[in-house]
Amino acid sequence: MIGAGMGAMAAAARLAVAGHRVVVYERTETYGGAVRRFERDGFGFDTGPGVLPLPAVWRDLFLKTGKEPLEDCVRLTQVDPSSRHVFADGTEVSLPNASRAGVVAALDEALGSGAGQRWGDFLVRAREAWDRTRRPLLEEPLWPNWAVLAGREPYPAVPHKRLLRTRRAATLAEIGAWELRDPRLAALLAGHALGYGLDPGTAPASAAVLPYMEHAFGVWYVDGGIRELARAVYERCMRRRVEFVFGAEVTGVLEKDGRAAGVELADGRVAEADTVVGTGPWRLRGLLPGREPYGPGAVEPTAEELFPGRVVVCLALRGGREPGAAHRTVVHSPDATAELDLFTAAGTPERPTVRIDRPDDPALRPDAAHESMVVTATVPSAAGYDWSAPGAADAFADRMAAAAERAVPGLRERVLWREVRTPVHTERETGAVGGAVPPPSLAGAEGTLHPSNSTAIPGLFGVGGWSHPGGGLPHAGMSGALVAGLIVEGPDFRGSQ
Image 1 (cartoon, one colour):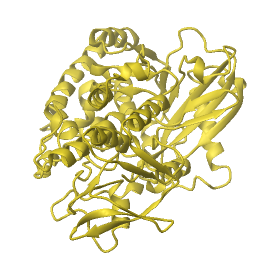
Image 2 (cartoon, helix red, strand yellow):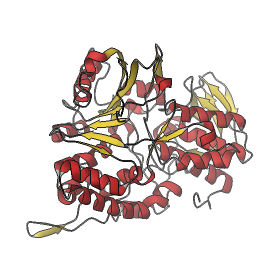
Image 3 (cartoon, helix red, strand yellow):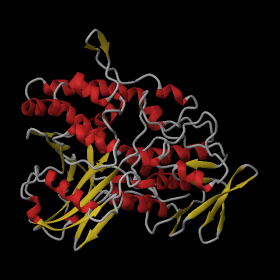
Image 4 (cartoon, one colour):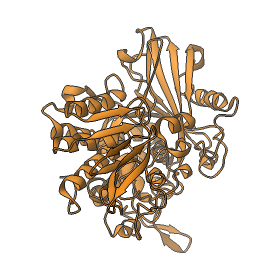
């Protein structure tokens, strides 16, 4: 196993239970991939995901790999409200968790009569897209005839008359303009896309499944931080006798008789194996000079550096968290059009949309008189912007703090210190080119599909965010389940049940 990311560990635990001896070689000194924690002076911060959607994926892993269920290993708390939103015009709304009626009522009260119903009707259509794509994009190996997923749009868009033509929304931006018909609802939808590193102007309408997934299955927090989920998965692997070798960089994949037969390490060691589970497609190519791991007709991996990254600002604050503060607040950019230049230009948004995580968690602060806060923004990757240039990271962090202060007045006066983490840190920790963050797989003509977990080389498999079914914590867990199924049951494996 190459790498100890969440998808790789999910595969490792399942394979160990199936009777395989599993050895994981991790280039860095810890596990979890992008699910990291920064600690200093009694403060703790999740520097990767801040909340957990679709926890059933990880419940299934623990159910299938041992006697202790997930809730015996970590404490899950449903986040309520699921999110608070501050829009460009100053309007605010807090959305209850996993309640369509509650969301409709909250939006009607905050945005005006009819707004909630339009969002509720959108969620009904998003559910249809979810029902059509859930199995092929989450629970099944990538279809050999994968091109059908890139054809017909699964989102049932409402016909829209424009001039003399009838059109149907093909992107999230068009859903916002033609179906939601309120710039604040459009911003609410766009915020979900940005959170996954997607441009709402080009993301397919099928990306409606992303807000639907959070709405239908709730948003959860792991007490102690999401890093605790990574710890629990790592410990489950250890109990199943998975071996971890940290500080071990894999520099090549061995082949024998036309199939993968082990790995070469940077220190010259060779580890033989019957099966090799690798990392992202581009790195697999680098480990197989002169060989193409993906055969004719396969999904061609998109260059990682073409995707955006994230800047994460960890704030150590004096003063306690006020009672009733939302766990997650999204402050939407007052200049949404200019913000989307981050997907096409080398510059950073002048007034970015920011996501603020304020967990009410004593484990992440030194005492009740202090608070830990994480502010995140989607930005160009380090391949398109020089985040290491003097002052670049701090200047953008200042703009993020100014945006966050729209939701948390007096924020900057409370800051004891801050830690700014850019795509440069992400690249160092995950190996992704430019520190890019993989989006989830999406169907439709403008969708993004990631290469299959199987490769053209027998015994070689891909796992994690850059392989099917793409990025995100639920997708990582499913990636591990799919790889384990393909190895244990063979090419006839048809998916998770």
